[in-house]
Image: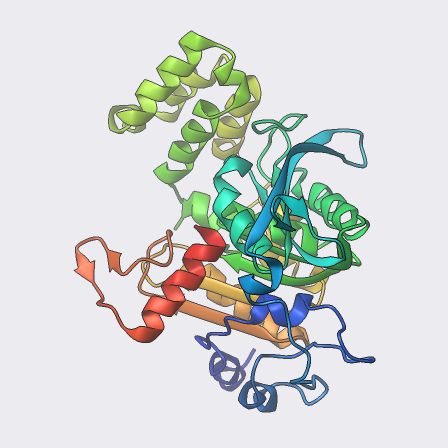
Length: 379
């Protein structure tokens, strides 16, 4: 790709569109109007002329429309293609605890970090006219099956999106959202092109897992740290008090453990064999081989497989994955016709704060609104 082309694409970066989800998930409200475009006439003029804005199409946007209420149904078990059931919480617009009648756009979050942590997002969007589907990834917390890094998230994401689209409370338009691993679950599903996926909001999700695991060819300790965290928070560890206690204590004071050679670090995973396998598999593949080129671990090598839907990427200049996020934005913008937006702020991997380390970037009207938006979406 030419430097001129990249500059042309990056000219559309850092444009904030707080109406991104409403635009693409909004039901058809008048005639045959299809809201496929960006939020403002200015943005529309910068995009492909084939994407026209009907400014009369209004998305659900105010809590007052929906009585500022929500209703949540916990631990609905959604059956995947291979028969495994995944635990899912469903947040719906409601009034006085009674779900509102009608069909609504849906936002799907899939997380390995406990769907209970998505309670705030579920409430916020339900109060603004969306159904939120928050799901534990396979093998995590209340879901069935065994966990392995992104192995099943493509098909599981596809199945969940299509399940959500078919429900009585859905208008058939499904968007996905989430940060870090949750962004990768979105990429994994998008590469299988679910028919009812219409928009994506991936936050701090890069595109080449090997670059993170072996930055510059050196195995990164953050990979081991993440493996330890995942083992400590696993349902298998929860069922073994002594194992869980050891993992918890090690994670709280993990520097001595991280200083050990990999073979000694691996000892802690012995009671949890598939978490041990996850740890050992990474070290068994110190070069960019077929293991790291698997589709779900290498979206950057499979851009042509992505469904062509609007995407809003977010990252931070102090996040080690920012280069991968920008690469995703640039390459998918060049390959696809639907709008792509990128916002990069003064943040580490946890986006949306006004501070990073000891640096304070100060409040401003737009920054305050932006932080509120991001906080509402990703917590």
